[in-house]
Length: 417
Ligand code: EPU
Image (cartoon, rainbow, N blue to C red):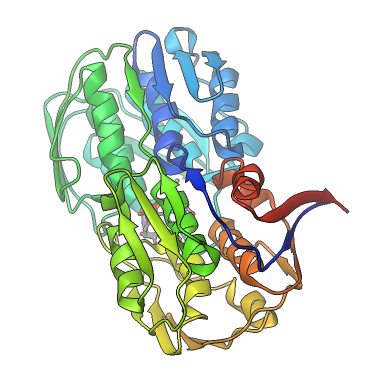
């Protein structure tokens, strides 16, 4: 078994360069299938989630060339066949293949997607989008069989601004006849990244990044070049690391606007943060003030940063309240933080963090990706050694996490035990 071992209490200094966004890459890679010629995607992080998608592409018969930061995909040889369950179960984003295969071939058979166990995570809104465009969806045990002889543009109102449903509906609508309007669309930067990619291929999408997206379907999409935006969750995670144990730690190659809510909350706490055009510099600050945080869709406070920011709340003097509104089960990190010395109560959808508390290293488990990130941050701060088990979820989302942290002064390693 592999574990992450961290000796805490070290000061982090220097520069950490942020990688391409996981949640953009995992949509851009399947989207490449829609093109009728070769596509190049740059700034793709080397994480297990992108490896899993490249493996699916390979299985479907696409030609895939991977260099360190880019992926070149020739989708012309692709075959429409069912992706084995063990491949689709590896990650949530496998269901983007459902959309692109449906758009390209008018028929798809797929197993339910996987992903972190942080709540129910239904995909009814994706299916609603497909059906609105003319698809017929049959659910058989743990798989979907979807047919659409003619995809026709339609008005789709999403019941909640779901990232996945917005992307999936866009992926199908680009090839449908006529105009599709997605109302109550999610506004996350990853959606803009996907829309830009599709437009580079020749799609006609306007309004991505707002709650109303309009898509005029086209007959063909051509190969193109695109770049993945910086990962705003990795950015936020390392900014929090800087606030916990940093000394003028520079988080570089970022889009500061994408983490504005985090920066504003940190300023409210009293953290010293300096914001540059494509970087942030942050240092550990004593006597932080408690705050209230509520997770929301973009541009609200990202749910993916709530578990990491909890560590910072343990360092604020007094009671902070954090409310999770997106997922039902995203506090699995809390019992482990409490074992490390924090004083956090879970009250329904909220946690009350009573600070300031010292943290001590112990053995903890990364129950999901961002819970793992939270425990890495806790380990960097804690006195003594923190051993994190079940590190797979962490490696799904953070490129070269050990190397990056080591370079700025952390003592962290992956050990076989
Ligand atoms: N929802 C439904 N029905 C649907 C779709 C969503 O009820 O058809 C609910 C979900 O259960 C959830 C909420 O709506 O409570 C938001 O779900 P959304 O569809 O927006 O999330 P997602 O597309 O499944 C992506 C990211 C998540 C991130 C969320 C929210 C990817 C691969 N995943 O998930 O990232 O938390 O958006 O920003 O892009 C992570 O990186 O750790 C992660 C979980």
